[in-house]
Every structure is written in C-alpha cells, then in structure tokens.
Image (cartoon, rainbow, N blue to C red; front, top):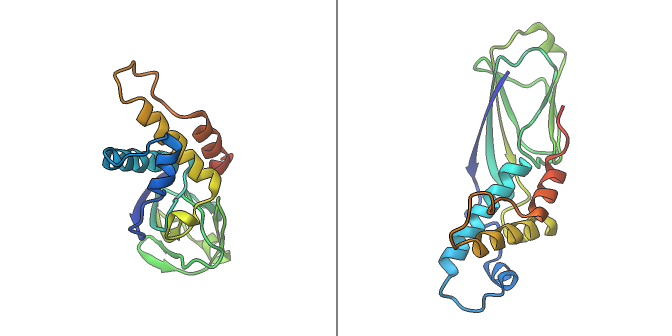
Amino acid sequence: MKVIATRTPVSASDPFDLDAVKDHLRVDFTDDDTGIGNMARTAAQEVEQVAQIALLTQTIRVVILDPGTDRILRLPIGPVADDAEVTVSIDGTSFTDFTLIGGIRALIRFGDTFDNLTPEQIAIEYPAGFGDSATDIPADLAQAIMDQTALHYDGRSPMDAKSLTTSPHMARIAARYRGVQA
C-alpha cells in the first residue's frame, strides 16, 4: 500500500499570533517581524509534519495505491470533524458506502459492499484542521510553535548541523497528537 497525501490550505491566516511569538522570544522591536514570521511559519509546518495534523483548515486529498481489502482506513492527517463532508472514489468511481469516525486520528470504515471489490486505487478528500484562525489552535500546539520558532531564532548564528533540530516541547506535543500507529 502506498499513500500519497496533499494539502490545500483553506484559511489564509497564519497559524500563530506574531505578537505572542515575539513576546515568547522577548523581542520588542519590529525590525525582525518578517524574519520571525517566516520562522514561525516554518515551525508551524514542522509541527504539522511531525504531528501529522492540519493546524488551520485544509483540504486533504489522499490517494492510496494498492490499498488491499481492509475495511478500515486511517486518515493520515487530522483532526477531522465528525460531520465533515468526505468524498471517496474507488478506481475512479464515486463510493458512498462508508462511515467517517472523526477526531485527531480519524478513520473511514467501509460498508459491506466494499467486500465485493478489489480496488487498485482509493481517493479520499476531506477537510482537516482546528479552525480558520490561530485562536482555534489548542494552546499546547501554539506553545510548541513558539518554542520551535525560538529554536530557529536563537540558532541563526552558524553552528553544527546537529544543534538545530527540534525543541523538546515541540517533539513531546507533536508525538501526543500523532499517536501510535499500527
């Protein structure tokens, strides 16, 4: 099974409050606002990748090649609202016999008609994310973004490649959202 997931942002907002990030960095001037904003966007992308989440609302498109016949598929990026509008196609044909189980680690459970299929490709499209603005993001994730931004900001001077990695707080929080996968 090969899974290809693409993200299309819905929200045009930044997933952080620049003033809160600057307070966290103890920066009280505007000269570095552009650079700090870029670092915070990078940190947010790192949180999303490590935690396998969408911070702000995004449309996720998942293509699964050679999916097998398992009736339960874990969606690779969450969170997904329980009432989210999800579209599924199997080998290019719309398929509606499924149930969405929403949450951070959302699932699709296929119905009985799936048992008669041997799909080569399943495509799933769904919305994921905590909301459309930085205020919708849980506080622990907002803090993880700020801590990772601080690591980038403080690590601007030359150093060895091993020194600039992941803030311990970001790694801990991201792991909690990512969860255990079988």
